[in-house]
Image (cartoon, rainbow, N blue to C red):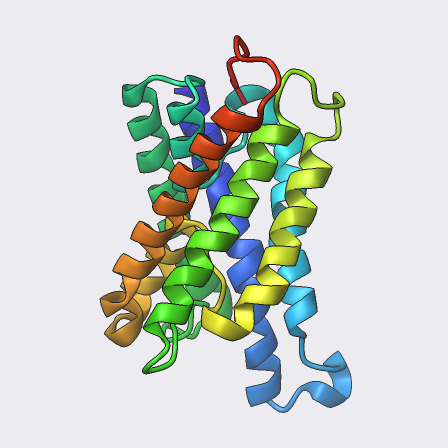
Length: 231
């Protein structure tokens, strides 16, 4: 139960900070508040919000649950023997609920129930979005597996993981809003509806495939074959 609560809170924070940065930035523009609030938030700033959200939560809940806050990460950890199947499902449920609650919080704060920072790719760009989500999730999960391995420098996993997610978001946001995380996509999509909801399968399937590839590659390249990833 402690791990369940930790993953729920962590995913909630990820969606609130990451998606919220994009939503609230748009509201400043639409409300013509630029003269008092400064320039609208940039893609780089949004990417950093996602990355820093994971970084701080790694140190907040990492000792409790490992701070997966991402079904693709939990899938990769499970495939590497770091958790049992039932525990992975528990993590997934907590992450999805956390993502939904994060979207609810965005709506309550913004008082705008039509913009939640949902992922969406442009018509005709399904292939690029799908391939991008697979590749960047693979790279991100590989960083997680490596940074939390027994031979990695202790105490620095959160920094590596947070910066990895920030870079992924900065590159991927122009393509499809950047997901690499089914829980991050699901909550905003169910409230946004329309194309965002009809495209949600891409942001569920592609990241899981990326997590699978990362787990397989990690099995090949890791140096300690007896090592079990637990975080």
